[in-house]
Picture (cartoon, helix red, strand yellow):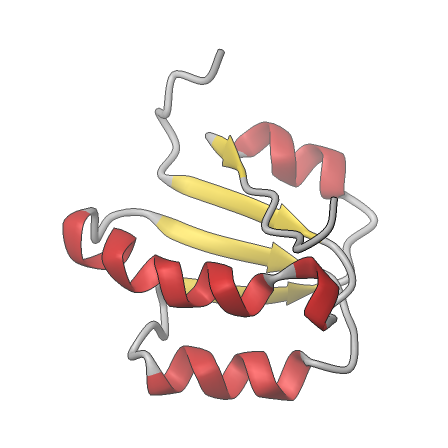
Length: 91
């Protein structure tokens, strides 16, 4: 059980429509307002990278949502976070 000591949420997967990161970024607007100390880190690569980057800027979430790219240390990153978010549309 997470102690939520580290204000970081991690999500990971291919940056594609099926993974629902667009929904997660949109939802993060509400999290950022209520809990400005929390950060969302999305790990992965894919065809929606530019679109997600633009969405982050449009929503004013720079510094609150970060696209981290591919990581060989994902297990470590997840262990350092307090929450793992799964936003997939079909999983």
